[in-house]
Image 1 (cartoon, rainbow, N blue to C red):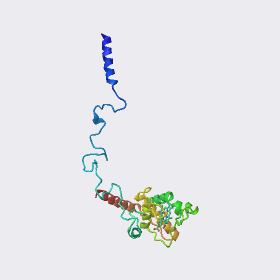
Image 2 (tube, helix red, strand yellow):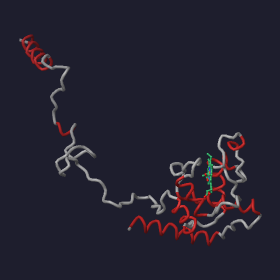
Image 3 (cartoon, rainbow, N blue to C red):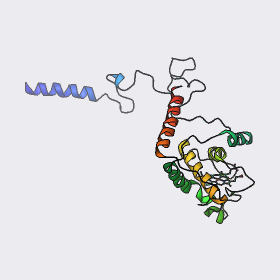
Image 4 (cartoon, rainbow, N blue to C red):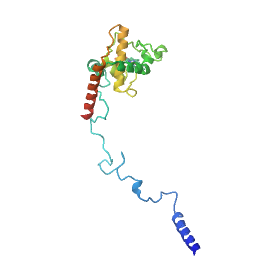
Length: 213
Ligand code: HEC
């Protein structure tokens, strides 16, 4: 009797396993566990007429944390940036120190530690025409220094992938100081800690405003 039960159980096991075909997907129990009922991002779907499950953001949408930049990569807008664009960060010891460090990573190879255009790549003649920040033929001011980091200029590349807007302004302050040093003029004067705190609050408030708008 016992044997008959064993044979019965074994034959059920065989009948369940023997027919499976490894080359085709197996039967899915509870398919919802494998295939989401909700639409996958960017998958096909019937929600919209173009057959996609999601839509592009509305025109003019600004991603969170993104700072819009209103100047194009043209000669006119470079001039406009020089005339209109102002540093929103307070001049603090911290920002100046950060700018000096970042300048060392990104700019000194070409422009030199002193900003005289004699970096190591200039000395080795890898890049030609690197100007000194004291070049009298150029208008080098805060807006222009920021702008050239946004888009680059001829042999100089842009620095937008490597640096954040805040870092670019910190670098800008350091460049202004190098220029002042070369020309023997007044360097940026760091504000007191209390003033810096208020100014920083203003920057943060205006950034939050931009995000909420
Ligand atoms: C690969 C070498 C190279 C690097 C790295 C580089 N520059 Fe330049 N930079 C140049 C050259 C070349 C020019 C001159 C471009 C021209 O006028 O044709 C220039 C021009 C400039 C100018 C003058 C722009 C104007 O309006 O006349 C500024 C300011 C400047 N660079 C700042 C920077 C800063 C800040 C960094 C680092 C974030 C940097 N550069 C990194 C090569 C470089």
